[in-house]
Length: 183
Image 1 (cartoon, rainbow, N blue to C red):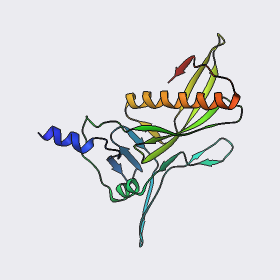
Image 2: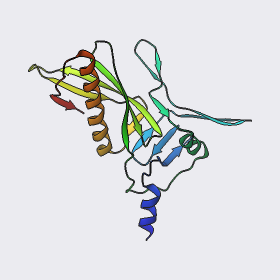
Image 3: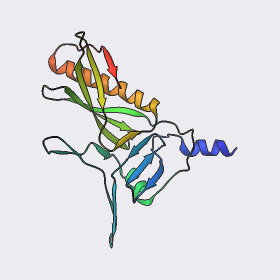
Image 4: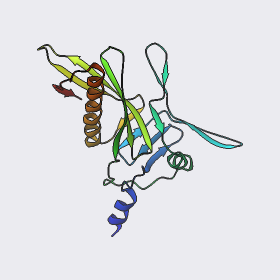
């Protein structure tokens, strides 16, 4: 019976659960499958605040590649509403929010993915040419975003690459062929 209770506590019911939170280190773990680092927490006379990490491009531009999609998740993070650890947490539901093509470069698209409709992250799709004349695609993960589940990483990678190829194909007017997906 206790195992059933733990399973129910961690099940994905369209809501990410915070399974670990270390304010001093700035690390938040969601449903034991995703970890965000470099989260800044602060408190003052008016309460508290939180800032998610910002990614920097090579030319110095800043991008918010990780975002909270609703107040429920923000409140859980601020009140430290953690669920107990268990090995049987269900993975979050993943969905493509948007896929945007980029100017001609090796990075052909940015794909924003939703995790249980509460957390969003923007992944890049990198296209490379192989020696034999083939093409391979790779998913670029945002800084400070880590998959703790290889199965979730694989399913997100497939979704991201598929959405990036589709977006690039629609922009160019010709279908892109997926030869290989690289980790």
